[in-house]
Every structure is written in structure tokens, then in C-alpha cells.
Length: 317
Ligand SMILES: O=C[C@H](O)COP(=O)(O)O
Image (cartoon, rainbow, N blue to C red; front, side, top):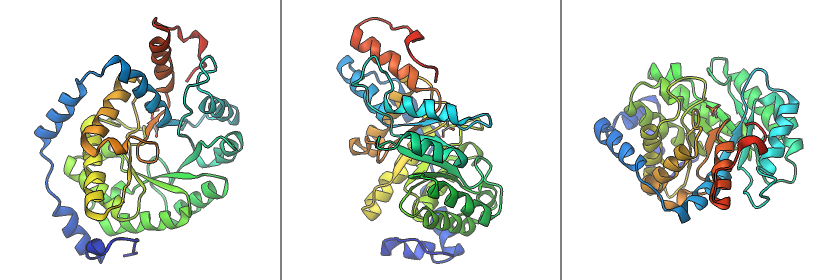
């Protein structure tokens, strides 16, 4: 197996396929009932009015504004980039989003449209969303994205290999992609809706962290279920425990199906309660979403203006 830069205590776990399997299957099992109850009870927590505007602004600043459609055009990406820079021209104090996320062939357009904005350019890669292609093709795609200006790469893991128990192959692929990323941040999409169990989600999270992923991300947004609160709890527990064990902080990105301010705030509450308040920053937490920003902007206007605001003044998501 390839090697990742790891603290000594984990060097043994990734020595070979057998050690990795032993490590991943030695992780504590997830208590499904306890996990789902805790996620549900945190989801009902209400937040005070004063905190709501803070939470809305925090959520906006942590969005990876995404378009991943076959029908995407350069014009659509330019319009998204303009919205990413200034989400609500009627309220210029509205924060910018964290990143714009596109397919590799649109990175150049996004990068040009976002220059000097401080907004990251994220590209999906490694045969997104299925992950079904050869290693060389996947790495070539990562190189295309990075050489076109991507500052972040959202790769998908090989779920087939993972479900066959070929953990070494998944690990090696993440290590190779990380190397191809150079300075770009690597987010590792687990596609949790295909992993079957919370135990598998925990194993996949640790595998991605051990292999050098900067973020673990729930979903592509292309299958159902996509992001859920319980699954996000498992990812947050993994980065929290990884930090305790190694001193290294990694990020979490739920993505897929997050559409409302209420949902976004539930995720922020989960981050605070599971990983801790220090994770509430764009370097460590993102919300991957194609259709969330407008609801946050409407709720923000409602908070500021004291009455419901019509969506007519906002461009479409
Ligand atoms: O990575 C982000 C997802 O593809 C977005 O999914 P969504 O369109 O359900 O928001």
C-alpha cells in the first residue's frame, strides 16, 4: 500500500491491507438507535432570534455553491460566480460563500470569474459521481481540474472496492489523488447512501482521514439518501476523534438535499454539539448545496427587515 503522512501511532494501521482491515473493523460499532435519537433530539433544538442571524451568515459563508448538471453552461457558472461574490446586492454586507463547485471542464470559467474574490474553486473528480473508471483516467481528471485553477478537489471513493472489503485499493487511490492535488484541498466523498450501515460510514471516514483527505463529505447529491443528520454525526465524530488521536483537524461536508435554512441550522447545531464550536468555520465545515442559498437570503432579509421578503428580488438558485 502507498503511504500517507501520518503520525507514528497510525503508521501500523496502514502498513498493509490486513492491518488496515483490522484497524477499521476494530473501530467501535455505531449504536444506531442512540445515534438516531441524538440526531433527532438536537434537530428540535431552537435557537434564539439574536443567534439566528449569526447562524444564517455562518451558513452562507460555509456554502459550496454547486452546479453539477450535464446541462451546465459557462454562462450559468459565471452567473453563479457573481452570486457567490455578492449573494444579495440589496444587502451588500451579506457574506460571500466559501466555494463554487463545478465539473472539471468548467473550472477554468469559474476560476476566471472568481479571481481575486477569495472564493475557492472546487471541482468534482475521479469519475464523479459513480467513481467507475481506471486510476489513470481519474488522476488525469484531477490534474485537469488543478491545472485549470481548482483550489479544492471533491473526489468520490471507489464504493465497489470498499464494499468488497478492498480497503487498500480505496486507500491507495485517495493517497494518489491527494498527491495529484498538490496544494489543492481534498474532499473525499464517501457516498454514504451506498455504504449500507453506519459502521461502514465510520470505517470509510477513518479510511479517508488516514489516507490524507482534508475533508470527509457525505454524498454526491446524485443518489438518495444523500446527506442526513445521523450520517453527518458519524463524520463529525470521526474528525473529532481523529483530532484527539493525532492533533490534526480535518473538515466535514454534508452535501445533497440540503435546501432550507432550518436544515442548514440543524447541521450547524450538530457541528457544535458533536465536534465543537471551533469546527464552525469554512476551513473545517461546508454545506454542499445547489439550492440552499436563496432560502438563507430570504430568511436573512426577514430577520433584518422584520417582515417576510419576496423571492422576486433574488436571482434563481
Ligand atoms: O456536492 C453537492 C451536491 O451535489 C449538491 O446536491 P443538491 O443539488 O442536492 O444540493
